[in-house]
Amino acid sequence: MTHTMTCDNGFEGPSRRTFLTGTGSILGAVALGGLAPAARASASIADAAVIPALVIGTGYGGSVAALRLAQAGVDVHMVEMGMAWDTPGADGKIFANTTTPDQRSFWLRTKTKQPLSNFLGFPIDKAIPRYTGVLDAEEFAGITVYQGRGVGGGSLVNGGMAVTPKREYFGDVLPMVNADEMYNRYYPRANAELGVGLIRPEWFETTDAYQYARVGRKHAQRSNFPHVFVPTVYDWNYMEQEAAGTVPKSALIGEILYGNNYGKKSLQQTYLSKVRATGRVTISPLHRVVSVVPAAGGYSVTIEQLNTNGDPIATKQITAAKVFFAAGSVGTSKLLVKLKATGALPNLNGEVGKGWGDNGNVMCGRANHMWDPTGALQSSIPTLGIDNWVAGGAFAEVAPLPTGIETYASFYLSITRTPNRAQFSWNPTTSKVDLSWQTAWKGVSINAAKTIFDKINSKEGTIYRTDFFGAYKIWGDHLTYHPLGGAILNKATDNYGRLHGYPGLYVIDGSLIPGSTVVNPFVTITALAERNIEKIIATDL
Image (cartoon, rainbow, N blue to C red; front, side):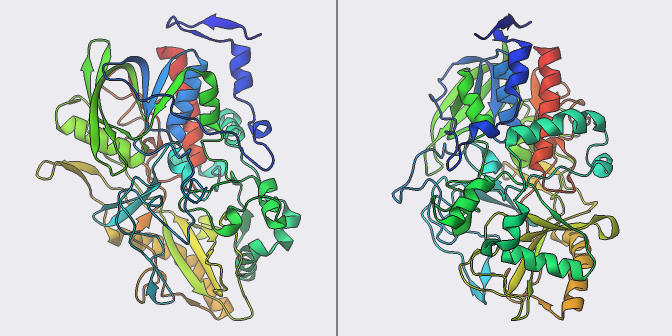
């Protein structure tokens, strides 16, 4: 029997004991050989609905907020611009394979825009039908930002590398946040809920699927760079079964960029599965928030419903007592900048839109010798990193090239220390939001990455690959997978994400983090959301 208590806001909620039990490990809920069902949209939000809490977005921050609000007895509605991703396509799979992209792969494009655009001298992008696919390559002047589109946000399309920053670096990431609280309470909670785990070392050393990572490790060791095994949210037991041929393959047939059909524990299988189980949360996919203005009872929110061609097919006006912006760094920043500039929320302060960064992302490849094959079979889930942060300001993932053929190439995504921060601003001529990023700023990231790869090339007698990002282009300096900032904590908001000037409006996603987490960011976004929503529930509800 579940004991309940009456919350200050008059809602019935779970007892403290039940709430704390609910924040424990999800590992028992993840079945061996399969994962828990995704949170499904129970009904599209109705026009003129009046709701206690609206969460804009279903990524890491939004999922944390929705779960904790529901567990505290608050009814929540989540709106998501992308699709639900809970129905298989004609091939029986929900997501498209990386090597054979179709309309499911990209958000409203008629041609793919893959991060690695060329291979062996040939362009590899292809024509696809326009569709509300799972990966958005959003282009700004100077940079393309890759983002997940769908229920689960970025968790659908990322590599699953679940990294907690080293304690000594935390002051560089969130200097305004108590590090002891984060490392003693919120990081452990986030890692448990996300189902974070490490590869079994014995299997790593013997499986063909990680030959590429072992080669990367050998080269790092020979140049005296520290290497680390990186935790991930893939079900490692499942991957071993993939290798044994006893379950349908996912990571071992290259699924990653456009979603994993099986082994990855995305938010659909973790937080959003628990969200669904509360019975207090509904999710409306293919809904986009276009306006938020103060109104009696809280805020009047205008929402467009989209079809799979991206066209609005209905406009709805709802009232929400509290609104949580969780549309991701770019989505939240663009919306807030627009609302301030167009007079919907004129009292937002001047920090809105500032402090955006790319987490220092830069990519490169190296051409190895014939005696260093990286393997035709490559798991799509990276699990090894090269750490030169202290000496050179770079941490590099040893990334896969799951092409199905031997490439004799090592491929890397680096996260680097970079001071450059851009600003979102409203352009009244185009009625769109611009970003002031400059591609030249990536030079800092390239120089940091070179502290690793120049040395390895010199030691190994190897060269950079020049065929991955265009004709004779070494560096993938045109993109980021890790957008951060735009509504910085303790600047655009107070120290828990409350937007200045508007009680009941909150930011609870990666836009709070000032441009860098020094590692892959989603664990930090999740842990910060856990910290903030706990305070908001305790004091505002």
